[in-house]
Image (cartoon, rainbow, N blue to C red; front, side, top):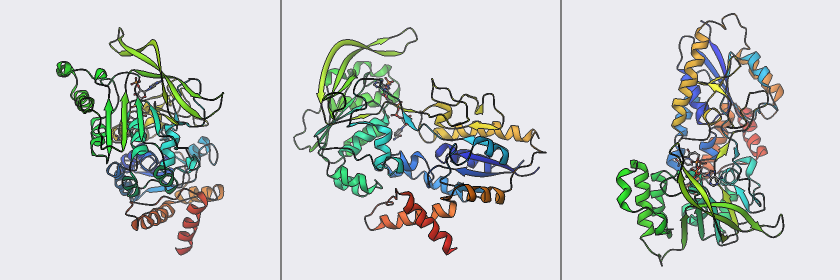
Length: 455
Ligand code: NAP
């Protein structure tokens, strides 16, 4: 059987796991072209995982191994819908896999949400991670208190990043522009607000536990909000560990030696983000106080008691989940923010597949994407093995390259990315950083062109 060709749109974890599984195929063998709208691959591993979590980021070595395999190519600065269309890809490949993740935020839908100083975690995370789209965010971190809305790991990431000391920040790959702002920040207290209780919070234990290791950080929670130990036996193991941590913080009392403080405030929903007039900067958050109720399906829901409290602050981070964005020419379910599919095969379409967060929604850890991608690739390979594409003519690897070079003047291939990567790593060496990120398209292209000339 001839070698089949698959295009993967998106180069984050799910795209790489799909690529790895496709390159494993032997009958028929498959070659993979991976596209990204950015110059750089790895998606959220580069632009989402917190810079003080280098161990999590080191999963990228797996992706480097996949990228080094015969049959794999990378094409950066290619945006689906702007530079190329779905139809053009389907003309040139046997199949197309969408691996574009969830690129925007879930909205709160409350007054004041768009005031200056009310920031989506998607933007803030992109900013400190050097994502070119958010490099200009320039948040005002002058006030001493920040409020984070949400009780998941992203809320914890942004809360921690706001409170890291200069020493903790310097050895990371946080973008230079963010290091400057974060080290000069006046924020000394972050209040993390969850709409339900510690039992229902989405934090994972490892991420909570590491708060104990941060320099000069006191963690606080109102003891009245933490269930007592009598109910521990009924809790799942991971939840019990979380509750035990909250209990230890609730019992700790004020830490006189602490220079920074993180408080968890549960049973609080934001009702309005406050400030002067309609678009004055953030001065506080109005919180509704909830009680919990278990519905008929056993789900614990927050119910507004009608009571209110106001928390003064200078910045609000909204971390209530991500949301997928529709791709031009690709089906989209606006309700779930995902592409409708059956086991990864896009509904109503042939030769189009989906993996990762745009398939199942923004849940799970990086490794979750491996199983998810394997499911999709199993179906894709079965479709190819059926022989349906045997008589189809597709573009050769050279024809694709010629087409893209004509279409995308700032095309970045794997060699180009490797030149960027080597440059960033070398630039980080002096400061003991894993890398110093480039965030500017012109700077990326200078390196790519220099590398091409040297070849
Ligand atoms: P998440 O885990 O789904 O958490 C979202 C949080 O927002 C929940 O606490 C949710 O509360 C709350 N929320 C939703 N709508 C709200 C509203 N209208 N008002 C107030 N609160 C609201 O999402 P995430 O934190 O964005 O993380 C996404 C995924 O990435 C997760 O699977 C996470 O574990 C993973 N991640 C992992 C790491 C890591 O391993 N280090 C780091 C970052 C992210 P309810 O539960 O009440 O809905």
